[in-house]
Length: 130
Image (cartoon, rainbow, N blue to C red; front, side, top):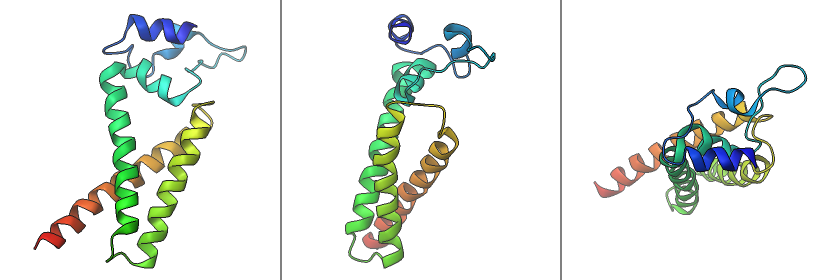
């Protein structure tokens, strides 16, 4: 209820990163509450613009990892890294549908690895065009 209402009120630009606790409140220990779902958390914090950017990044990681895996010049290690990225993407997507706080550090580490994979794909494509 509350998260969806806030998203509707702040649809385009969100409420700002780190301010969800001011809108959602705190628990009995005084810790700030989150949106309980990483996708809602991103949408609530950065609005539709940030959410679309997040989905594009998510898709780019998947596309690059699959392309990396099927690229004929890939070594066995690169194929294993591509499989790791794909399996982590699936695992984090399923897990983060139900909780956005517990694995958040690993989530951002995964996004960093995914961004490196996307960058590596561009380098591989440039080498193939030469």
